[in-house]
Length: 246
Ligand SMILES: Nc1ncnc2c1ncn2[C@@H]1O[C@H](COP(=O)(O)OP(=O)(O)OP(=O)(O)O)[C@@H](O)[C@H]1O
Ligand SMILES: [Mg+2]
Image (cartoon, rainbow, N blue to C red; front, side, top):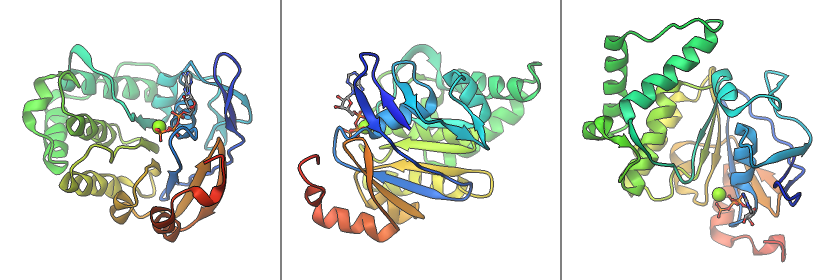
């Protein structure tokens, strides 16, 4: 896949990546190498144009679909920088998101989740992910601390149960205990029904969500691939050996 900005500048310069259910893939790479651009393009962000290649889910192209339609098919992106939505509470946001996925899966007919079921699920997930209950009634990400925003992204993941979860530096800004809690939360969701693409700068989160593959992205391309040991090597050696581009 190649991805360009609206002005034609190519950022992702030919990335070939397949994530199967039950697999965790880590993408690591220096700042500005195109990791978030790759994530946005997979999700269908309108500012990024896929100029070559394709994005396939179960063999079906997603390129013509809007971000919400991709979400309904089961693609999920936890943002590196989550946006605040003043006026919309976490609870209402999650319920609307779940209901629109349910509607899409019910051939466009409304099929809202019963309130008691929703309540039970959100409380259970919040406890599991150690998200303060007080956050549920606040406006989405409005005045949330950096770590609270990241936890709420993973709460969304746990509630929406996508097929492919893309996490863009979800570990950045989390304290040491929170990395463990959040990573374990993701780890438990990975299985026959979900695969994950984890973008990170640090090997630490990979101790808890063990990657099957590690891909190194430099200057818009995957320059090296390996197993979990590659993440350790990168942490020890940095990106210098990939040359000036890094
Ligand atoms: N909308 C945009 N407008 C202009 N430049 C952009 C835009 N999106 C990305 N870029 C540029 O593309 C390059 C790659 O950015 P990207 O955010 O994908 O990097 P990254 O690998 O996620 O970096 P980091 O590790 O710092 O998060 C950067 O030079 C960035 O400035
Ligand atoms: Mg980024």
